[in-house]
Image 1: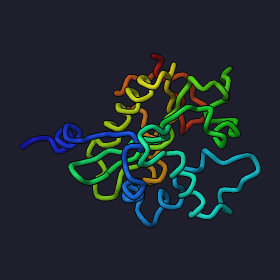
Image 2: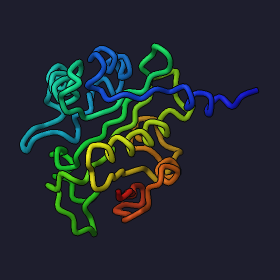
Image 3: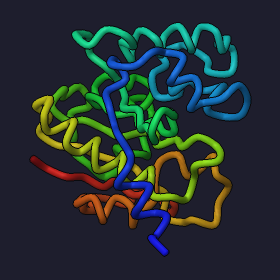
Image 4: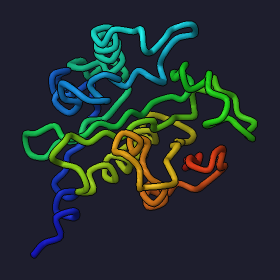
Length: 204
């Protein structure tokens, strides 16, 4: 019998979000749960903004603009994974300097590092979200590898991720990815800002 994970990865098609309809992205996120509420905006808040007070509709509006859905000439903030005609996965990837919320956090990824948060040549993967019913099939790993090639093709000098060190956590915490997943994609550890999170990086 073929290995389900390998079969799934082999048939996965990954495309930039600006080449798909916004409804396809929303199909991955669903209508309830953390992804539907977040809309990949937690790391994109501007100074003074409160995530808890921001309406979901505003987050959706911002994500639509950031993803450039339906406009292949627009910049995009993510990738969408497809199995046949089903959108099944989302990967947030883009310049680290665009992530204003991330720049406000001292611990992850900045603790113990001498980095310029405004360097647009350093990209980051901040979210790997897989649609319910398609998880634990290797889709997130395939999306991460696609993110590496996407960042490279767009002229990034390096790509970072901030995976969690444990897997015995709720699914919501796994959106940052796991250490073995990043290692398999060619990333190396550059710091350990907390016992639960690493900074991992691949230089081009």
